[in-house]
Image 1 (tube, each protein chain N blue to C red):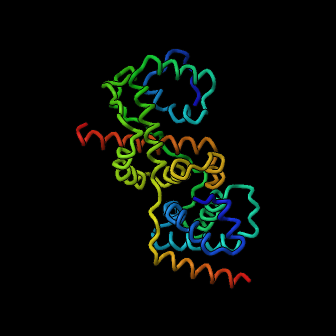
Image 2 (tube, chains in turn red, blue):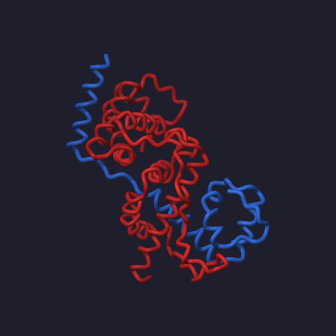
Image 3 (tube, rainbow over the protein chains, first blue to last red):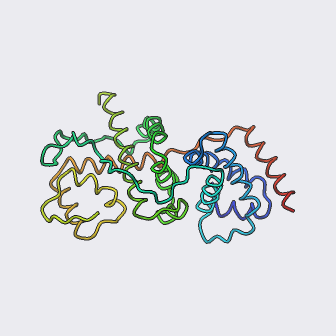
Length: 197
Length: 86
């Protein structure tokens, strides 16, 4: 698989195929993130299309100070914000949200029941059965948690890049990531429980 | 997160520190208290592993491929954008 940097230099030379490869790689991730800012799928598609236009027209000016991916998501967030919409930089994070239901602990804060050890978590087949409940849980996260989890854990951007793209502080990023991941873990746990493992 | 009390961490506190631990954001002394709790607590050890498994699984949620029609639309847009550009 060609790296982004390689595709980018081909794109700078006007290579159509390199463009299509990048679109195939990033269109859905862009749509997912756009959807956390705008009220409808149609508006999200528009913001994503404008992002690609920004890439094609701005590619000669891209200096490679960040990765292509970070640049791309930054354009998207800017377009999505101009598209009108839910602005929320470092707003208060709201009430504390426990990582685990308090009812799971005894009066001294220790686990009331033993925790299940998840078997075979490295197994690809197991991972495949998790994809659906995990995607659903991800789609159900509050917008700001979803933004951080998408960029950090799905796309694998380094944490300073995530903060830069979203315009949030390191501290807020960690809180949002913690809440998002905790919810995803709980969703997987619930899923495993219903299967009676 | 600031931990003022010096006695052992409770499990309920440990689960709130898991992300800071994984992100390397705990102070040295908090990290030591976190790890010393884990050594004696199979449940929190299982919890930490569940979080790691969750993060790994989240990293495998790859995008679906685009349909040929959508790809063709993008090729047309690309040509349009390039010519308008020049």
